[in-house]
Picture 1 (cartoon, protein in one colour):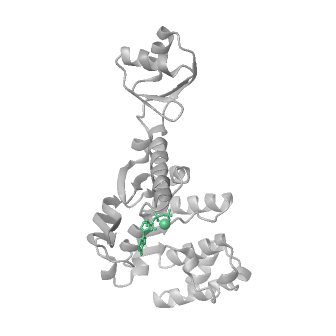
Picture 2 (tube, rainbow, N blue to C red):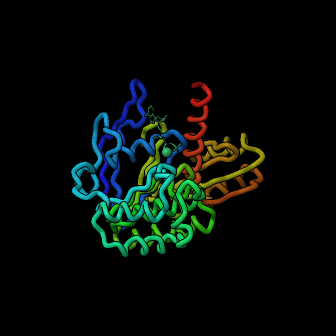
Picture 3 (tube, rainbow, N blue to C red):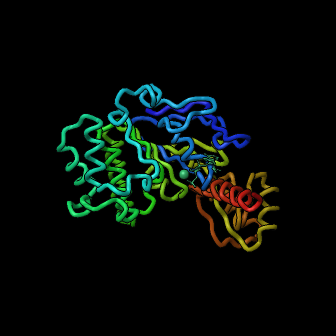
Length: 298
Ligand SMILES: Nc1ncnc2c1ncn2[C@@H]1O[C@H](COP(=O)(O)OP(=O)(O)OP(=O)(O)O)[C@@H](O)[C@H]1O
Ligand SMILES: [Mg+2]
């Protein structure tokens, strides 16, 4: 279990993380989703004690990270996979971690096998690793102490499609056995396929959270037509609420109702379907657009 309560992190006058609260539960994969610069890595660094919070706190297994006697046995962490010591081999890095945590030596080979790093690859220096190999080594290090909690910052970064599938299955299996998984991503679809719960962050603030089912469902109907003004008027007349999306309308009613309204108004539709996920996607696109505008202004 991970509990984050009113977490705020400021750098001078800039607020990178603004009053963030959420819980990541055992047996579930919690996706931490947000565009570049949203505050995901900063939040995670605070969770694992690498950066002090300005206010608020984060707890792993009901304790602050700094109070965990042997953190590697409680929480597996993968932050920046490129931060591994480049001059050491993968096997050396794992062996050092295994000794630090007081684990049996056989654990190293077990983990290398688990992440499919061959003996040749694990004998290579990390500076010669591909990004995907670094991610695998990072996962191996995180899993080494068989912790109950995993905190992974963009673990799919640099993995090919087969690697992403592998990672997804691994994390799924881990959560199914009762583990708590928190993983970040700036890609909605990457998170959508694996997460049970979602925490969406933008400009340091949480903009949505809940189960994936909740966030993706009940978004009403998505409807497209070449004649938006006529359909809009008909929806207003029928007292049905709707909001314009980039190139469609999202209507707070069943497709059946929307089809009837369109038929009565004589409007030809080019698309009519339940808007599962459309609300989340639109919100995420708006967040991304906002940060891009800020990036330009800065
Ligand atoms: N040490 C620091 N000093 C000043 N600003 C910082 C520092 N660390 C992070 N920031 C700022 O905090 C904001 C959030 O950064 P963070 O790395 O947490 O974003 P992120 O959500 O992980 O983004 P990405 O998807 O690009 O990894 C950014 O604007 C970043 O520039
Ligand atoms: Mg980041």
